[in-house]
Length: 195
Image (tube, rainbow, N blue to C red):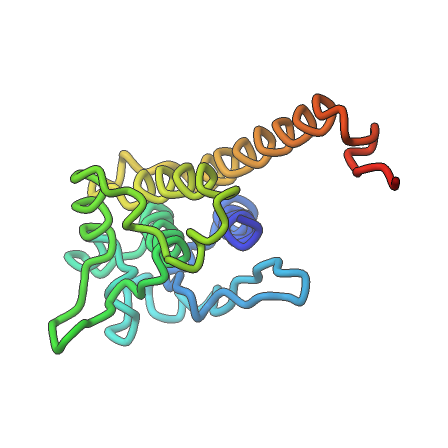
């Protein structure tokens, strides 16, 4: 969740403070610091391309309207961020081909699996080893699906995305505090006292 939140904050900062549309949000443009905070790279280059998307941009991250108009917007950045979240949660690249096929449309694939109520099948098997984060993964999946809405007016702003992820974090922290204070075997600091 730290990677998702710090990426969302960075993108929201570009949108609000700099009024900059990134136009090329993808996994390879998210760099991780040693503390796992994310830094967004390759921003500020969009004006050089006249607010259109160069053909070299990765198609799997592009919003449907960008494919038609070749114009990137704040809302198309939100779509790309949603695809990035789906990639983090599923372990699949947005344009991953299997057995010589053309590749998958990651948002469409996730929607089809979730529609069949196989939500657990969506998540990367490596993430599923951590049962304590399953609820968090489902909440991030819901945020991602809102971001990849095919109707751009139905997508949240990046500020709203940050708020949703932070709210998840608050609830998780509150639950953790309640659990430690309710557990008589734990000390007041939440640690198991030495015996």
